[in-house]
Amino acid sequence: MTEKLYFATSNENKFNEVSNILSNYGVHVDVAKLELVEIQSNDLTVIASEKARNAYRALNTDVIIEDDGLFIDSLKGFPGPYSAFVLKTIGNEGILKLIEGVADRRATFKSIIAYCDSSLIPVIFVGKVDGTITETQRGRSWGYDPIFMPKDSDGLTYAELGSKKNDLSHRSLALEQFAKWYTGMISDKHTQL
Image (tube, rainbow, N blue to C red; front, side):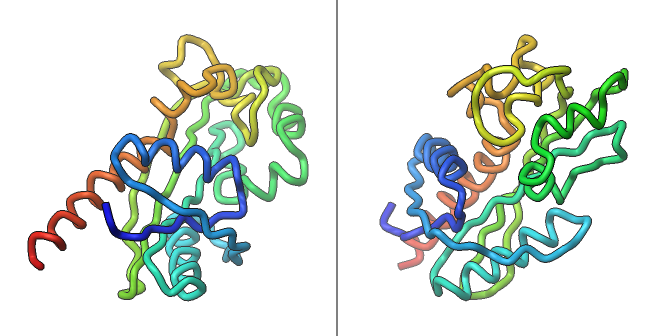
């Protein structure tokens, strides 16, 4: 693939995951280390769309961004779109404390991949995985991986799954949709030349 595509992020762990997942589809992505201003909204799609437009304006080239949120049922969807802020302020320990003794530990992890080009009209891809919040942190990893146990993971958290996480994560589901669309779009461009 000859097209240049950037992934705008300041999170090296996220870039490594995105790069590894997209490479399975023959899509190469370069990192653009940008600190993007995140608008306040209760809707991840709105946040991701604005971040993608801002990333395109900063780079003036095709770009993708990823925004995600952990939605915990017993907390009425909290932290949701505020997941990054909550992780920085109270961390996994704080989340576990908030739902200590709560029987309903269901949660959904949602990922939005937003692609933006010169049209400044982002194309959105969504991946969702249902699961539960564990009672203790399990495994070593980043983000909420040590406390989120996806539904079909044989009782393992994302952190305990290691590299197998990329086979079933919310991020990989959204990236798979994006990669299929993107490789088809590039093929169509080359056919029209």
